[in-house]
Amino acid sequence: MSTFLPDALGALLERFDRHSFDMPRGRARVRLTVPGQGAWDLEAHRRGHRVRVAKSGNEPDAELTADIVTWERVATDLRGGMQAYRAGRLQVRRNLHLGVGFLAATNATDDPGRLKFRTLDTDCGRVSTLEAGVGEPIVLLHGLGATKQEFLPTVPALAPGFRTIAVDLPGFGDSDKPFPAAYDARFFARWVRALLDALELDRTHLLGHSMGGRVALEVGMRHPDRIERLVLMMPSMAWLSAPPWAPALKLVRPELGLIQPAPKNFVEGVIKRLVPQADHHFVAPALDEFLRSYLTPRGRVAFYAAARNIALERPEQFWAGLETLSPESLFIWGRRDGLVPIAFARHVRNRLPAAQHCELDCGHVPQLERPREVHAAITRFLRGPAKAPGGRSARRAAA
Image 1 (cartoon, rainbow, N blue to C red):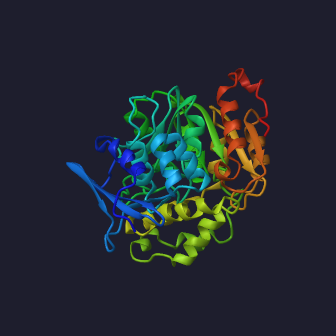
Image 2: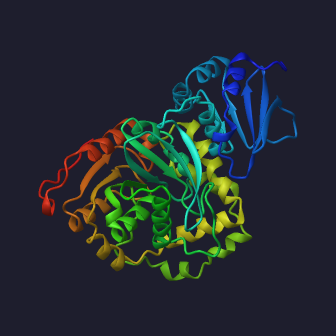
Image 3: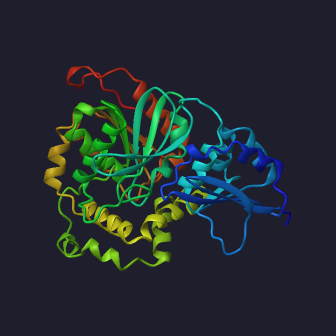
């Protein structure tokens, strides 16, 4: 293995801006690896940084791996680097916030729409964000067990026309994990409103996926004055009637997560079920992101509490509240979704006849499985004409 830093990595590191590198813990070790040639660690903290040959025993916080040709492309163009990541030629493991954040911090430009990571102080607590683009704002809310990184395909797809902001909901990723806390839809909606205040956004489009879709609905019902349009991708829905196992589940306390993690093979099975049709190089980073939170006591409590609240959603309250939803809304469904069945679409249509719907041939994660189709449908909806009074001009989106 060579100890000489390749020119491509040297060019990349010369552009590294420590001040724009968001480190939630105040320090980070990012490993850059060229298979067959060597690995080098960027060790950064708030007062400085250095680069040296990676040593065994020094575990990195994030690791980026690519062949030298790909690194040369990354050194030339951040957009090309992100395309290489999506294509699987550049692997980012362990901590995507730091790994992709490192790439963003090497993008030597003052472009206001550049990719950037930030941790914002809100009235509720700290919230971690990933942002790119300029224009009308759209805030993206992830699903259960995921983080803002699930929108890595979506942020660059929407950024040319929108200020696109993906966030870690409280309890997940790099945002605060309060304890004790409810981790129900009302709790998350309060944090989202606090985030909009911190971002100084009077109004915004709001997109939510899975659990994030349920949170987006809650924000739309409670704070319609803050929302332009809603995009609900496979949103978590209440059962039409309470399931027979609900009384037993009420006895299970999320606080047990402080001491009892689930086995890793069980966790891996959950992740692979969530992304059954996605390319394999997306599954491992998704598992990394889940484990980053789940392997902490507060992260486990947040996961268990949020999952329990989804399962125990009160049907009468949810469906009655849905009928009051006023922002224009697009619901996106997967015909092969095993977690949020497309059969829910019929019940949504009955209660929200003005809402638009898009059906895709995919499972539960369309931004990974059908990125072009889902991003095109979202853009058409957000760019479409405003709804006439009473919803008479509402149209059904097709994909």
